[in-house]
Length: 452
Image (cartoon, rainbow, N blue to C red):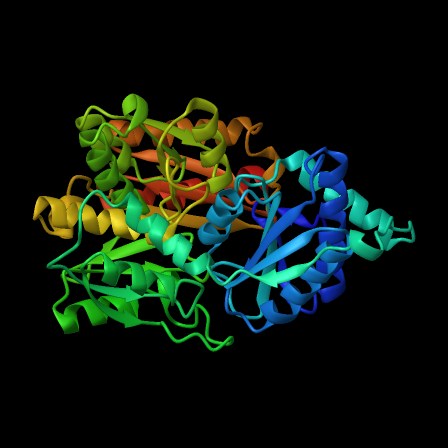
């Protein structure tokens, strides 16, 4: 697998890349590293462990729990819950560590392990690197220091977790959702229980699809990566709109009453205006990645709001938000972070606040989302090139400059070397789709010529 920790924990094909032995070893290593860092000093440590419904999560959860308990950590198992719920409970219960087993929007054979620090925040890169180093050293023969007797960890189910999370979400709502008819697509994932429950309690009439997880059907033709079934259900039932989550419910996409997609940029634009009205949008600023549509930036500027852009990845959005105290950020893919109420993207929370805006204004989601116009966007992957020279090639820089002159203020060019493959992604936005295609094609040819 190369380096184990990626931008979102350790992920791979369960029982092939990500084995029970690895899950156990990483959990023991995490306990030792956090103990050395002083996290457990002066008290008996506690961890919260949750998972999505994947079949492999059952044996991986057992391995993680065994590893933590063998290292002297008491474990509270919360069962199948969304990633943001595990993060919330880690903070609410004063736990020293949280562990979520999920591969998010990936297909069922994959799974992953995400470690959370005290408070429910993502572990620092330095700690992840240390965990990986300790895991590798012990995997190659260095013995563990193992507690015995009363020093071993105790394990118990924490069945109250689901209700505690639902109560938290309801407490965040600025107004009820009475009168709304909403279709929820739960991706046969981790939110299949809590999401419909909280929307019903908030007053909405709910139709659910993708809400019967069996361990094998997670993300299978449904959820935020497959919006077709949600679009059809919204139109069929005459719903006000629909909301789609992914497997671990840390993202939210929407569909308006006509079946038109409302992406993460549009959702953030709607929420930004709502938060500004409530005085909750600190510094009148939203944080997003460089992949956000130019139409999002132009919409915020028209509304007198500021946009701060980061590298691609919700971790970079979160880092920027925490460093400067911003309240709202996210990605076009539907990872939306509302930092006053969550330490990670929370698809259920995002959907609730979007619904609250519709209910509170009496305006349709289609009308609200119209605050921004998505400019046509063309993405071309150029394979088999030297991605390391994207920033140093003079010929490529000249081609980009020429493209930017042609597009002017109503277009944008972005070249991104892949982090895992020998390819470069060419993204072009323009007011006209044909212009975007033409410019993207010429730039793709320039990348092949300069870097091939």
